[in-house]
Length: 148
Image (cartoon, rainbow, N blue to C red; front, side, top):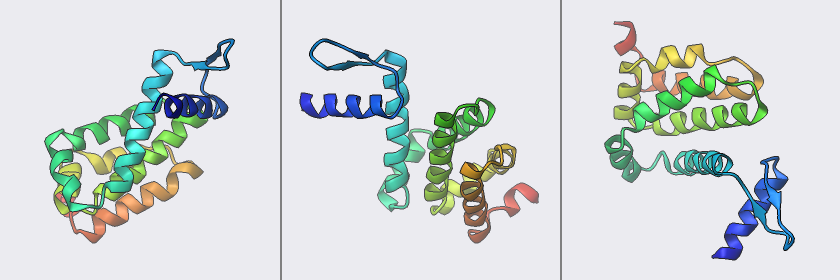
């Protein structure tokens, strides 16, 4: 287990996250970098499982709509680095996966999600995610909630 954790930290160091190498070759990351990695891995994990019906209940219970909107807003505002753009792309994929559920999509649209998507920077890393999210909302016919 400890070996797996050290391998993750070493691979994170190779991916550009800051760390200090000790004499033994171990990588020590600061708390902020670890928190960022944890957030990124949670988003990626949820994105992979998002279309499963069993995921919807816990996501809604833990205010997943509000979390997605907060991440989208924060990353859209502070999207200056390539790491932020990659995370923003992952959040868009997560929203798209969870939008397979009509209830999630309706809540997201009702809480201003379409406007948030339209305010997202249109760069090559985000164009596909924005398009897929809007397509998912249109397919479920939940866009009328924000326009009507």
